Image (cartoon, rainbow, N blue to C red; front, side, top):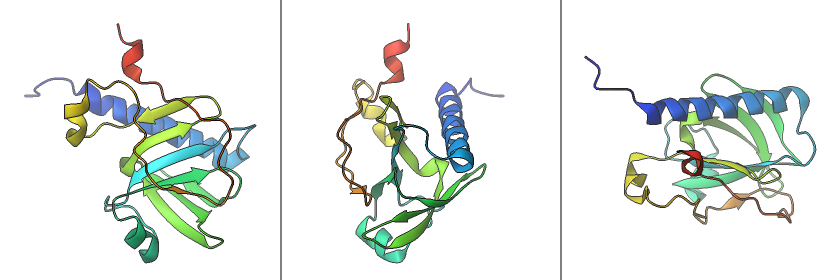
Length: 156
Protein backbone atom coordinates (compact mmCIF):
# COMPACT_ATOMS: atom_id res chain seq x y z
CA UNK A 1 0.00 0.00 0.00
CA UNK A 2 1.29 3.50 -0.88
CA UNK A 3 2.43 5.67 2.00
CA UNK A 4 1.00 8.83 0.46
CA UNK A 5 1.29 11.18 -2.45
CA UNK A 6 4.87 12.19 -3.20
CA UNK A 7 4.16 15.81 -4.13
CA UNK A 8 7.85 16.72 -4.19
CA UNK A 9 8.64 14.10 -6.81
CA UNK A 10 5.55 15.03 -8.82
CA UNK A 11 6.62 18.71 -8.80
CA UNK A 12 10.11 17.80 -9.97
CA UNK A 13 8.65 15.74 -12.82
CA UNK A 14 6.42 18.65 -13.83
CA UNK A 15 9.30 21.14 -13.69
CA UNK A 16 11.51 18.85 -15.77
CA UNK A 17 8.63 18.53 -18.25
CA UNK A 18 8.56 22.33 -18.48
CA UNK A 19 12.30 22.36 -19.25
CA UNK A 20 11.80 19.65 -21.89
CA UNK A 21 9.00 21.64 -23.53
CA UNK A 22 11.01 24.89 -23.53
CA UNK A 23 14.10 23.20 -24.99
CA UNK A 24 12.00 21.41 -27.63
CA UNK A 25 10.69 24.79 -28.77
CA UNK A 26 14.23 26.20 -28.87
CA UNK A 27 15.46 23.20 -30.89
CA UNK A 28 12.66 23.75 -33.42
CA UNK A 29 12.58 27.57 -33.60
CA UNK A 30 15.73 28.98 -31.94
CA UNK A 31 15.88 31.35 -28.98
CA UNK A 32 13.25 34.11 -29.16
CA UNK A 33 14.11 37.68 -28.19
CA UNK A 34 16.52 38.04 -25.29
CA UNK A 35 15.83 34.60 -23.79
CA UNK A 36 18.86 32.61 -22.66
CA UNK A 37 19.46 29.95 -20.03
CA UNK A 38 21.87 29.22 -17.22
CA UNK A 39 21.62 25.51 -16.43
CA UNK A 40 23.53 24.08 -13.49
CA UNK A 41 23.98 20.34 -13.46
CA UNK A 42 25.45 17.64 -11.28
CA UNK A 43 28.32 16.21 -13.32
CA UNK A 44 28.39 13.12 -11.05
CA UNK A 45 25.04 12.01 -12.49
CA UNK A 46 25.79 8.78 -14.37
CA UNK A 47 23.80 9.89 -17.43
CA UNK A 48 25.85 13.05 -18.04
CA UNK A 49 28.07 12.72 -21.08
CA UNK A 50 30.88 15.22 -21.49
CA UNK A 51 34.51 15.30 -22.54
CA UNK A 52 36.92 13.78 -20.02
CA UNK A 53 38.83 17.05 -19.68
CA UNK A 54 35.60 18.92 -18.80
CA UNK A 55 34.60 16.30 -16.28
CA UNK A 56 38.07 16.44 -14.71
CA UNK A 57 37.82 20.23 -14.46
CA UNK A 58 34.24 20.14 -13.09
CA UNK A 59 33.93 16.84 -11.22
CA UNK A 60 30.85 17.88 -9.20
CA UNK A 61 28.94 20.69 -10.86
CA UNK A 62 29.00 22.95 -13.90
CA UNK A 63 26.79 25.76 -15.14
CA UNK A 64 26.31 25.98 -18.88
CA UNK A 65 24.88 28.92 -20.79
CA UNK A 66 22.64 28.51 -23.81
CA UNK A 67 22.64 31.89 -25.50
CA UNK A 68 24.34 33.06 -28.69
CA UNK A 69 26.26 30.00 -29.86
CA UNK A 70 25.04 26.43 -29.59
CA UNK A 71 24.52 23.63 -32.07
CA UNK A 72 22.90 20.23 -32.38
CA UNK A 73 20.24 20.74 -29.70
CA UNK A 74 18.32 17.48 -29.63
CA UNK A 75 15.72 16.93 -26.93
CA UNK A 76 14.32 13.56 -25.84
CA UNK A 77 12.22 12.29 -22.94
CA UNK A 78 15.24 11.69 -20.68
CA UNK A 79 17.40 14.75 -21.40
CA UNK A 80 19.01 16.75 -24.15
CA UNK A 81 22.13 16.76 -26.29
CA UNK A 82 23.83 20.02 -27.24
CA UNK A 83 27.16 21.22 -28.55
CA UNK A 84 28.59 24.25 -26.71
CA UNK A 85 31.74 26.26 -27.12
CA UNK A 86 34.31 25.91 -24.32
CA UNK A 87 37.28 28.18 -24.97
CA UNK A 88 36.72 28.14 -28.75
CA UNK A 89 36.45 24.36 -28.67
CA UNK A 90 33.03 22.90 -29.56
CA UNK A 91 32.13 20.07 -27.17
CA UNK A 92 29.09 17.82 -27.35
CA UNK A 93 27.20 17.20 -24.09
CA UNK A 94 24.30 15.03 -23.06
CA UNK A 95 22.40 16.20 -19.99
CA UNK A 96 19.67 14.09 -18.40
CA UNK A 97 16.92 16.16 -16.78
CA UNK A 98 17.67 14.37 -13.51
CA UNK A 99 21.14 15.97 -13.49
CA UNK A 100 19.78 19.54 -13.59
CA UNK A 101 19.91 21.36 -10.26
CA UNK A 102 18.94 24.86 -11.48
CA UNK A 103 17.39 26.28 -14.65
CA UNK A 104 17.33 30.07 -15.00
CA UNK A 105 16.18 32.41 -17.77
CA UNK A 106 17.38 35.81 -16.49
CA UNK A 107 15.79 37.67 -19.40
CA UNK A 108 12.37 37.16 -17.79
CA UNK A 109 13.51 36.58 -14.20
CA UNK A 110 12.40 32.95 -14.22
CA UNK A 111 14.15 30.11 -12.46
CA UNK A 112 13.74 26.65 -11.06
CA UNK A 113 15.80 25.03 -8.33
CA UNK A 114 15.58 21.30 -7.75
CA UNK A 115 15.91 20.33 -4.11
CA UNK A 116 17.74 17.14 -3.24
CA UNK A 117 17.68 15.08 -0.09
CA UNK A 118 20.96 16.73 0.92
CA UNK A 119 19.17 20.10 0.69
CA UNK A 120 16.44 19.14 3.18
CA UNK A 121 18.27 20.90 6.01
CA UNK A 122 18.09 24.18 4.05
CA UNK A 123 14.32 24.18 3.54
CA UNK A 124 13.76 27.30 5.63
CA UNK A 125 15.87 29.27 3.13
CA UNK A 126 13.32 30.28 0.48
CA UNK A 127 15.68 32.40 -1.60
CA UNK A 128 17.84 31.01 -4.39
CA UNK A 129 21.45 30.98 -3.34
CA UNK A 130 24.26 31.71 -5.77
CA UNK A 131 26.24 28.52 -5.44
CA UNK A 132 29.24 30.03 -7.24
CA UNK A 133 29.09 27.35 -9.91
CA UNK A 134 31.47 27.87 -12.79
CA UNK A 135 29.89 29.64 -15.76
CA UNK A 136 30.95 28.08 -19.03
CA UNK A 137 30.24 30.03 -22.19
CA UNK A 138 31.98 31.90 -24.94
CA UNK A 139 29.79 35.00 -24.80
CA UNK A 140 30.09 38.11 -22.63
CA UNK A 141 28.43 38.02 -19.25
CA UNK A 142 24.83 39.23 -19.45
CA UNK A 143 24.35 42.78 -18.22
CA UNK A 144 21.00 42.07 -16.53
CA UNK A 145 20.97 39.62 -13.64
CA UNK A 146 17.82 37.59 -13.12
CA UNK A 147 16.16 36.67 -9.88
CA UNK A 148 14.97 33.15 -9.15
CA UNK A 149 11.62 33.06 -7.44
CA UNK A 150 10.96 30.22 -5.02
CA UNK A 151 7.65 28.44 -5.51
CA UNK A 152 7.18 28.62 -1.73
CA UNK A 153 6.39 32.35 -2.08
CA UNK A 154 3.19 31.48 -3.93
CA UNK A 155 1.91 28.82 -1.53
CA UNK A 156 -0.94 29.73 0.79
